[in-house]
Image (cartoon, rainbow, N blue to C red; front, side, top):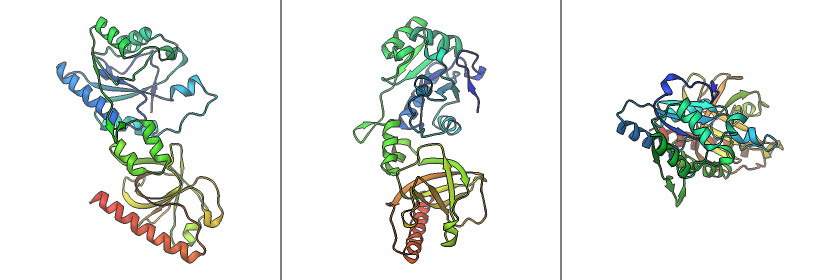
Length: 313
């Protein structure tokens, strides 16, 4: 996946369009509202202007404060670009937040990226949009620059759910508390965790419930057992019961993601796997013996299959 130099040339198909810029982590309902407004502006301008979403990779914080841990992303870049296209962008591109870019004043950023780089006809942003060195440019700044440059500007209000704006921060908090249902409402789709299948302890196989152990680089929900849809490397979709967290019955600490793929036979070590979280089934638990654990695993699989069937019915 190509990450562009923001001060070089953008692809020609991205020029003369309606542009929205942001990190867009999660590509959630608030981002979808921006893209709907961008589409409406494109049609008002004559319909020939592409809708272009510009995101950053990595997060600017990784460049400005490499000494501080950045928050775990909700979406890896390929999924983010795909999701932005799915919710309304004609083109989604990633630019590198280089020190040169981050050192530009708000006026320089506007002229070099939006005018010279993208030749934007229209710009769509939310009220909290900031740009330029030290985030000195605000929507008021952008309004002045657009007016002077003859560029249409649309400000889009946040999407409010449960009395507060939808945001990546709220989605992250929901996942960290294990509320994958709330996260799905804010995203407009189930939260997807993608990773590579690695070899585990093969303990599940001895219990009659072989698992795929996932190594992930994005945010993992809170410890618990979840119903999920598993998307296999060939694109097929299966119900899955996913255990996240330590294995207290076996005294195994640490964060593990183990997915029981219902009805799957075979090995997929080293291959990609995606899990779309549908609901939380239960908290982690320590079981007194093997029989009690196996009985609970059977129940987890039954409930996971029911959740999957309800979602795919």
